[in-house]
Image 1 (tube, rainbow, N blue to C red):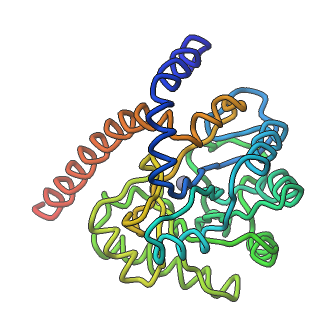
Image 2: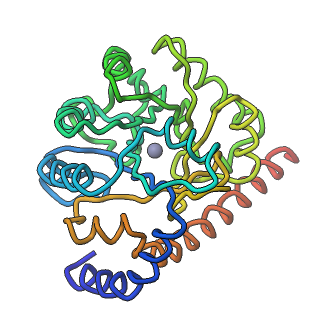
Length: 290
Ligand SMILES: [Zn+2]
């Protein structure tokens, strides 16, 4: 997004702000923030926030928001008729920089977080396809995952075994990705793994049912918006935060002023996921016929 795009987004956000403010005041609800990497980035990357920017964002949240861990948020969503506004911080994919750069900042501002790891990435047998070439080790190893799991305020969740587009997998493959990753993680961190994150936000009713049946308490998607009373706990909404988000943008996102724009983008993403899932199913069917 260029400078024109940033201004356009702010203008649209300003138009939606009064409605969003009223809604958050009367509806309350938990907004779950989605991060990936925190690292000094030589060029802009949508999944990477620089440590300086991340520190400013955490400072803003600490000053202006009620921050809670995912477990407490789920407790409140399950038990309260009205959930006060609150913010949860999450990270996807288990990047090594979460330990190196994000953790000291989270500790400085006493902000809890949940990190969703993919077991093959921790095994170092695969890496996120977005970064095929990086020379250094990209993902947390198991020793580092355990270190994070033992850090007060930090919890580890599952992001599958191999980070597939789940809706394109067979029932057996999806079940293995969802259930075996839970078991493997639980044995690695020597504790329960109660939360799941759908890779790339690709989720249908089938995966939601499987995640629930596997015993996860809740799961997060990339559907935008706030989580208020009555939300499906296995399809929690999240708001992506990037390096472009200064204090103004963070304020807009926390208040929900960018939700209408994000809903439109998400609708397009879901349409392309559905097309790809149909193509994958047709591919499996025609392969079976050969
Ligand atoms: Zn991911």
